[in-house]
Image (cartoon, rainbow, N blue to C red; front, side, top):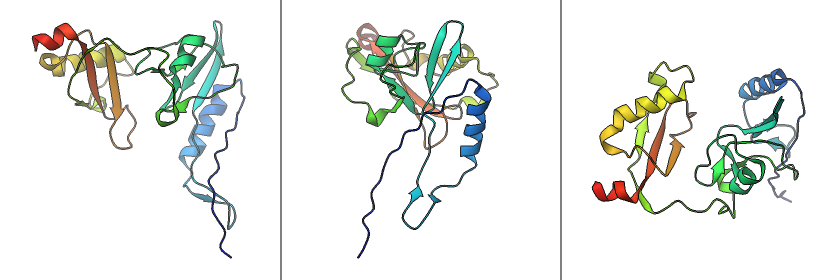
Amino acid sequence: MKLLFTDFLFEFELESSRITVINEMRQYLQNITFPLQFSEVVEVLDVDITTVCNFSDSGYKCTCEDQYFWPCDKCKEYGSCDSIINNTCSCINNIPSDRQFCQAVSEITNNTACGQPTSGCMTRWFDFNPSGYNINGDYKQLGSLFVGEYYREICLNPITIEAQTIFVQPASYTYKVRLSCPKEWCLSE
């Protein structure tokens, strides 16, 4: 008799008031080789940290880890700490009452609460490699470098900005970007 295999998705909530615990967990998970075999029938294929909530003077902020996002309804309901792009955000100003965690884009459904951008046009995808610059987390400088590199091909006041990582590298190494530009810009090009 052959056993049937079934995939299960388990979600665990880890509570800690110290960010060092989260950082230690990240480090630990980076050093594990998957899959982890616990028995002949149990193996762990992957473990991801999706959401980290911190408490500060202004209350909780819940931030999504790489490749995870809040759907637009959560961004609107709890207030986004960053920009809402493609009907998602990566930071909200409270812990959701339903205890929902950040989600992979492929898991986000029914996500039209933010509406669609005004009609315009999309630029081509631009490859960008920020690892070649010494910006030390200064994203304003990073934006200036991007504009400087592609000035003749982009609108300076985009409606939305889409970014995708290339291959499996984190966005801090290399990614591609395209802009949704206003109709007026599209007509002038």
